[in-house]
Image (cartoon, rainbow, N blue to C red; front, side, top):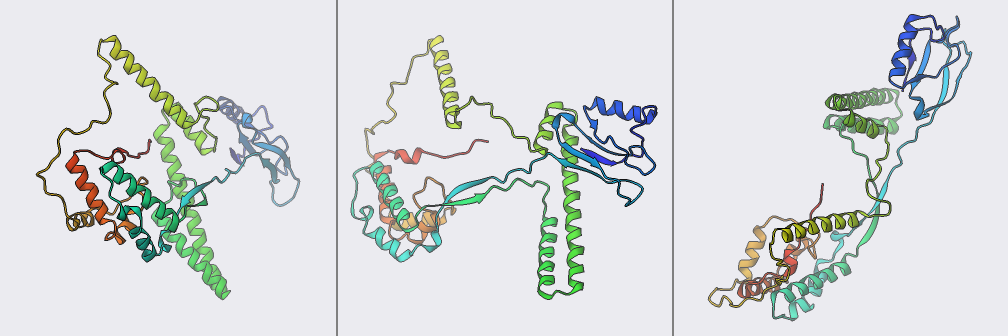
Length: 348
């Protein structure tokens, strides 16, 4: 949308400049909407230009108010503010866990009183007990949060100046002095100018990057105008179902290719093989050795972990015995528990 004083008589059909502008607007599928004189000497000098198919401009009017030699032009814009999206996120208040009570319950649990015969059962018991205790001491709660739109134009300089603006605003509200109000207004105008400049530079650079690619330019324009992107999936199909269908398609394609080339089907081979021999000569790890290794590892957590790594380290003296037994059982039997073969990742 373009508005302003063009200083060209749009109502003069014999004006060559007007004819040139009209041809340019038509080539871009744009229209000029003001149809009443906007100057006290006649003629339409002030224009409102937009794409007619977008139906943005409505209730347009020109008021004969002698504020200046130009009349004010009023209209309503049929645009919608992007709806602020919200989502729910599950969280726990880990800081409020009573560490002494947690360690006490852990020491009295089946994890520290029972010893399964194989590593897989031991790991399942470990995950089950710790997950149950974690749910008991830090119940999962749902929290509503707002999804903030991305602001790639936002930088550290704007952040610093906004912080100073807020500080000056608080100072003015606290004292009520005129000098403090002027300081706040000056800083506010500076921040607004920085934001406008940063946004302009960002969008200009994005347009320059894709100006030769019509498809990318169309996608960029749609995103800047907050036009929703329609899903390419069939109606009613979830993302999980789409991923499953894709996986099934490629699996069948591979199976058909193997069959066409005479490669035998090996799907009958068991996923789990019991070891024929055990390592009887290997020295088992001690609890102190395992504890020392754990404390040297990076403090990272995964959503598959039954409890956060930080909490585990704080109460490590209690579960270190079962953890050591799991490691030794896994090595001596030459088997890796199935849960250790699971992973979580994100697709981009």
